[in-house]
Length: 236
Image (cartoon, rainbow, N blue to C red; front, side, top):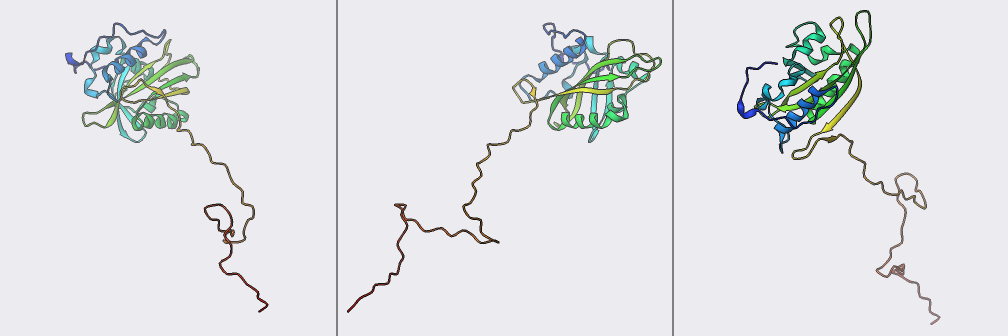
């Protein structure tokens, strides 16, 4: 990752974070992003300092959204170059995926930018001659640009083991989305539950056409009101 943007004010000490076995780089990047965020909704792209994730630089990258579902790599670590067998800066993130998986990845990018949300993808690559089966993990952490829009991502990609012949392309085996709320830890994304439904009341008589049922007028006492005119018979 490019180390030219070094600012001492953006360095966060990560000595107390607990790395996850096998994916220590992802654990460090996630903890660094969360520390920078603090009580805000999101950190800014300008807050990111490579020294804060020094041990994860080869797996880390920065994405820039250029169109719906399309985000290109602005900065990328050497691990991403190894997976593709070439320099990946300027390439879309979907280049790492099979044609069948690219639409799903594009949708997940929009979830990250629009919600905003954190997305973690479990990825796999099928074996082939000279290419062993691979399993890995990709995390996407949204960032604000200097203009305040959510158009950047701090990401981390870890694929343990021998890469084999490059390029390697992946399918999405599983995905997890965490919603982001200012001042609160990320929570699993859930759909808004539907409100309680009212009981259906069937009418005693269904009128034909658009006619309505006739109902007798009732007074405050609840008794039917007597008719206004009455016929009085007299023998006189």
